[in-house]
Amino acid sequence: MLNNIKAIIFDIDGTLLDSNGVWHQIDKDFIAERNLTHPENLQDEVGGMSFYQVACFFKDKFNLDDSPEELVQIWHDMAYKAYSEDIVLKKGAKEFLIYLHSIGMPIAVCTSNSHELVETALENNGVLDIIDLIVTADDLGKSKEEPDIYLEIARRLNVEPSSCLAFDDIIPAINAINMANMRSCAVYDSKSVISYPESQLRETADYFIYDFKDIEYERN
Image (cartoon, rainbow, N blue to C red; front, side, top):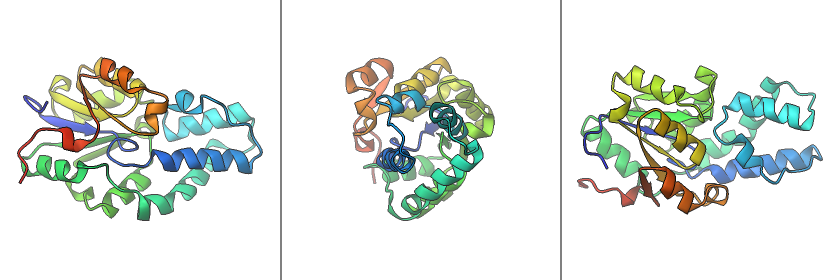
């Protein structure tokens, strides 16, 4: 999997972090507090969107008076405690990140989440200082369903897209990784798999893992 790879890109929620349950609960709590009807396929509709794009979607979908900026702040405040104290890395992720850092492999994060929440969680898990680059969908005003964000990361790391390996847990992002001419690895997540079955993840990505202990590399 790592042969001829010159940079590694990780999604955060559901990939590096076991955090998708937090967002499912935030959606439920927010919708319940507003006495709204929870759409059956909500996660399918917002998968890959930036934070701001999701806020615009919610505003239009539910005819909310809040501005997108206000919605983003509300969700951020609801998530902050979990990201700063509770959310942990997926099994084997810390060891894999430390290994990549030890061999000088550039490590980037590509996320629909916010810089503050991502950096807080990575710092709480002791790996923020070994991440070389964090790019959010809001940084570029692009969805992770488009290859642009991955191509921009490759440009900033000064590597060819074909020399990058990117990890994600949802099919729209895997498709974008493939369109960027990068190698893709799907990561199993108990929440994401409800919308994106394992069989589809295996068919779409170049590789599939249940967790980062599945990856073969020289462990200390």
